Length: 239
Image (cartoon, rainbow, N blue to C red; front, top):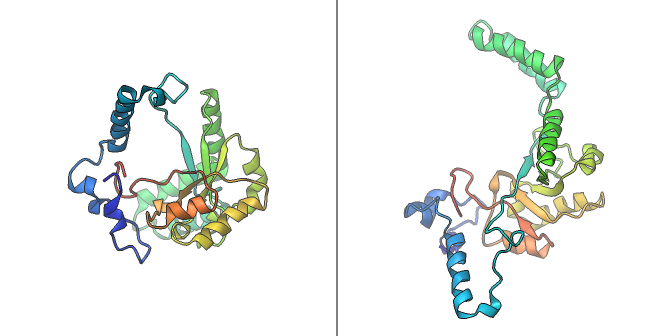
């Protein structure tokens, strides 16, 4: 388990996700047990007993055993642009005879919320940041820099770079799922930040794409210092 051998021997030549159902922890029913943390704790205690001169003790603020970090994937800059709202309104007008309650609800409240009150993604994101700042939390936000997504709402990076730079947050790359398996794609997405003078240190891949045989090596080669991808997309648990 600690060597991730089950993922190394899995045939991932097609660049597909390693599914949790194939993992050792799932098959042996310890998905929600933090094995690595417990192992490190036992190992640390052993060092303290045998080699106390090398024991480092607490590492989080010198008083705590662990810390929690908060991060956000920015999949969309503006989830409800006018063309999206208009398309939804037209679709619900067409189906109002088949599903009158649902269609009427969406016609009324989508128009009220998105058109009149303008409760858009940007405003809500700023409110969230204000709450976090009041609690002295500095979150990491992972932004998509690729700009040829099929969903135009995700091609937001260069158009909004000034606002992104103004955000009181640590900026990271929300790399595309393809970039997890292709170093050239990953390099291009990192370079999109470099063009604007932003040095990216952290990455989280879209849809939690990750390949143990390739991804760590590629991240280190390109100078990325931390990854926040690890986990299973389809299941809660430790990886």
